[in-house]
Length: 166
Ligand code: FES
Image (cartoon, rainbow, N blue to C red; front, side, top):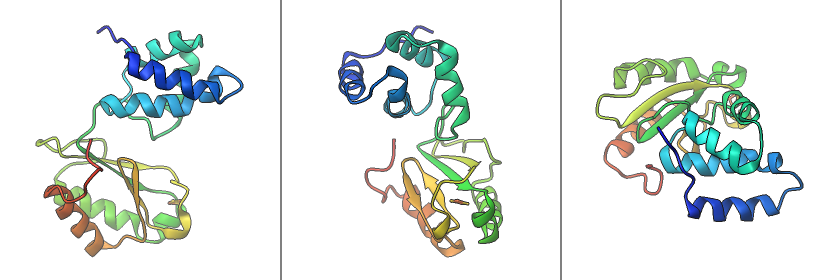
């Protein structure tokens, strides 16, 4: 499917690029910006960005596949990313993941039928001191326990987390 970068995106991209010494230095913030529009990074979007920046497609794809913050497929309205690294693991992440699997009736990598939630486990989110941590879209929720997790799910189900939903 053809993909065209919007003029609005190009204007933002040009502004961002101006702040970096080389086009590839702006790659991560540009990919984040691009992902905001559709919630995931399609092959054709990576291709269009590579062409716009004058970079090899392989360079863009390597960045997208390296970082878990880039979604390779469409995700739900709320993308729940539970950190699975050591600090979070020790602080209870496996229990949180199990609870999410049970309450949402999905496995990691899946999206609920209503399109509301996608569940993932990810590498360190860089907030180890506040383990266990879950990222929901762009926001972090720290020092989670089962009660906080349940409350958070209810808030998302009832649209009470303003500004977070895609
Ligand atoms: S180990 Fe979970 S945020 Fe670092």
